[in-house]
Length: 284
Image 1 (cartoon, one colour):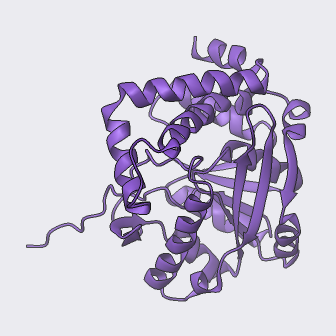
Image 2 (image 1 turned 90 degrees about the vertical axis):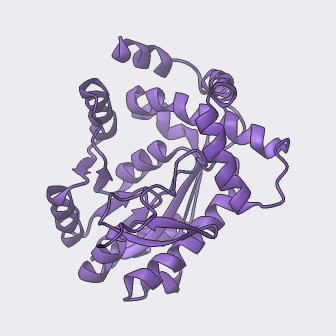
Image 3 (image 1 turned 180 degrees about the horizontal axis):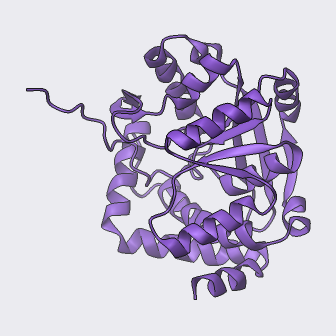
């Protein structure tokens, strides 16, 4: 049934997907107190003067629904239908130059816009291995793997075996992609700050770059007006994020991620709990 619904949704025009997604997003916003609470907590930290009735609050709820309803299309539609949806790729030359160095590239795509399409676009141009967290549902895992690997992407699970895959890909001079604002499970990562509050942050990207010499590139796939398509954005990570000290590099990188979230505030997934696992365990 899940596979049937995915195939059915994937056939819809992008404009209709966005319209239905907006309805879905607003319904979830009205019905889920947990979603509202976490979203407003992070939005208030990022924008202290934000009024709960601000158009941004409604806009991010609608964009959240669009992002969810885009997934069937991104996992099921053929390349000839998806590729024309990317109208522009700003900064593509940055990625090309980084890859030409021959030491691999770590592309970091936070929860902004359509990161699933970003992964496809990268694969259409370069060999890529994507770090992912396996689903607990066998049905969802099957859809996820089929949807993300059908153009040749390699998936690396968030375990020791997956990290070895990432190192191997970088040694071959290939791309590695990850969601850098995904909260790692303790004891992984470091506790830094996210909009002024304690937040556990991923440092795997830092370890990989320090040990392999890989370049670091940020990426966002911006959703344009409903049904109009997407725009890719790529640029190099700030120099401060190359600090050999993982904690200092992570803090510098978090400032860049905050800047990205504020650049596209409606399209950032504020409902994702960046503050979980943020309290260090007590020691006896």
